[in-house]
Length: 215
Ligand SMILES: NC(=O)c1ccc[n+]([C@@H]2O[C@H](COP(=O)([O-])OP(=O)(O)OC[C@H]3O[C@@H](n4cnc5c(N)ncnc54)[C@H](OP(=O)(O)O)[C@@H]3O)[C@@H](O)[C@H]2O)c1
Image (tube, rainbow, N blue to C red; front, side, top):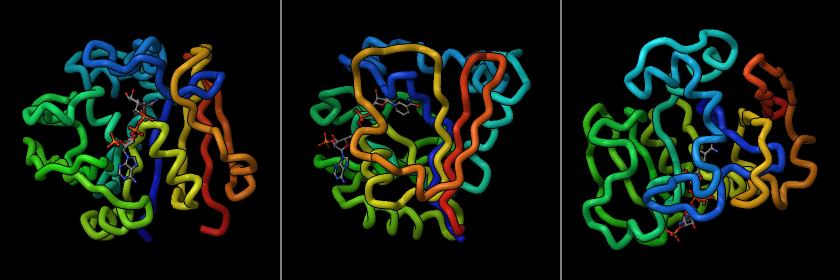
């Protein structure tokens, strides 16, 4: 069965998944890199940056679940680009010529444009569609594999509210951002639909997994 899953989505202790004031210079606004230092300390995270070394423990093991079995990603317009990317016909995302997805990626936006084929198997498609319809389209593209719901928080919250997420992996980072975009608003009682587990690691983060009951 093709699952809809969220992988290693970082939130602060006060529930923010990005800071305030996102811009071309600051993709996470005033949060800077604070939500993701745990990731960039691992072997997987360092390899993504073209570096060697890093930790090889539980954080690294969780990160390695990112790609296996995933045949497509859905992301929001504000993960794909800075405010104003709609006005830039050359904008192709933050990730350079060979983005780390290596699958079709469906960008939810009210400003669709023609698809962009990148190196390494990533093609960005732009969709103005409901979460349920977007998931149907992504599932067809994934050809039986899972669909990653890649963020940001607005899109993940919408998919959770619509009951479309089968597996959610949240990484609670011990920082307080105070402002930004929250993940959990409007999702009261969400945990009742899921089996939840948590494990804290020496880096200081807590991995919380939500697996839909009855799957
Ligand atoms: N913490 C993490 O692990 C993590 C992971 C990924 C990203 N992020 C960060 O999260 C931030 C982005 O998150 P966000 O919550 O601001 O925005 P987002 O979820 O990336 O995108 C929301 C936007 O997508 C478009 N959209 C969403 N649903 C749509 C639909 N059904 N139909 C058409 N368009 C739709 C709308 O933009 P338009 O109306 O403008 O088209 C909407 O304002 C960035 O700072 C990114 O770096 C954090």
